[in-house]
Image (cartoon, rainbow, N blue to C red; front, side, top):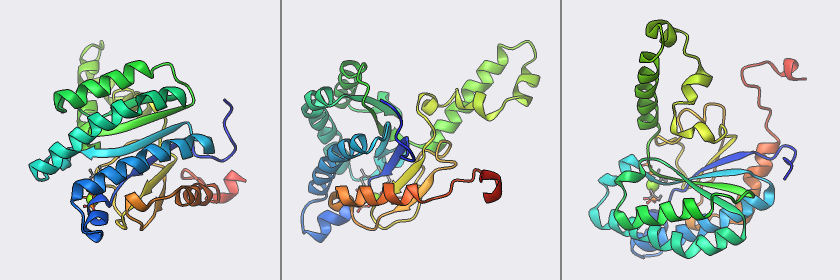
Length: 244
Ligand code: IPE
Ligand code: IPE
Ligand code: MG
């Protein structure tokens, strides 16, 4: 598939507002997460149709473990059920499923579902769905620093190796090494913060905020975000004249 002009190659989404959506509808928070999971399914399709090649969805942060036990357990159970249910559809639609984050810490069932989805969809080519689970941007960078130190220790002159470490080499030590940098970062739920998401790879992402709660996010909202992206001038530190 060829790249479409001006479409963001990698879109990342902070799917926020499930809990407030549920509250607004006088439903349990978990019902908000269920509705949210449905939208997560749809957005992959909307993105693929628009020509996006990679979509990263923030599903569970390293900080989210501190939520009430029932909510955490509910989210993990939902993850396992949804993934297994979605697997045939992902196959049919050419979705390659991958994850970013500390998968080993997930409960057994969720981990098994994740492993199976990764394995079975590994040859799909239409779009990469990167589900960020037990993910933290700071944690990712710390792990990268540890790997970089190990790598340097194997060099003839470790001190020199570290002194010469550049951003491309360091990036190869990060979890995100195989994804491309984020072009467009969308956050729903009326908050304007990053919340420890993709700190390294969103360095030059265009930010887009949608005030709707995630379960209310529609295809039209997604297309508005893409549309907005196409009108931005990405300068990467240069001047507008240099780009022209
Ligand atoms: C996002 O929705 C989903 C997760 C963090 C798992 P929230 O659960 O954060 O919803 P709000 O922000 O409380 O409304
Ligand atoms: C970010 O949302 C994490 C996910 C969407 C999974 P949070 O709801 O956890 O972020 P804060 O607490 O509002 O910063
Ligand atoms: Mg939230």
